[in-house]
Each structure stands twice: as C-alpha cells, then as structure tokens.
Length: 75
Image 1 (cartoon, rainbow, N blue to C red):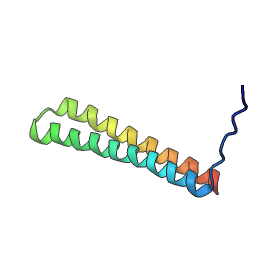
Image 2 (spheres, rainbow, N blue to C red):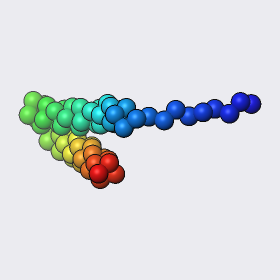
Image 3 (tube, rainbow, N blue to C red):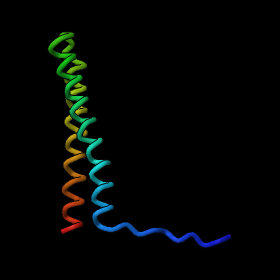
C-alpha cells in the first residue's frame, strides 16, 4: 500500500472552509427562529413556537461559541 500524503491547507483556505460551515449554522438558526415566529404569530401555537424558538437560540449560541473558539485559536 502506498503512503498517502495529506495536503496541508493555507490559512486562507482554512478560513474559507470555516466560513462556509459556520454560514450554514447561521442560516439554520435563523430559519428555525423564523419557523417559531410563524407558529406563534400565524398558527397561534405558542407551545411549539417556544420550543422551536429555544432550539433556534441554542443553534445560534453554538454558532457564537464556534466563532469565538476559532478566533482565539487564530489569535
């Protein structure tokens, strides 16, 4: 078996990949929050709306933690 050589990424390439991944977390968080507003305001289902809203907030907090952690590592 031949040894596989792993390609090293430059800092700019790592940053571009991190941006793509974290952008998905941001969109997902806001979509979940938007769905919770829809459930609460349009459908008048406040129980599920609050649960979906909390889920959206958790996703956005995870997003924030990932950004802060990556920023501290690159600093």
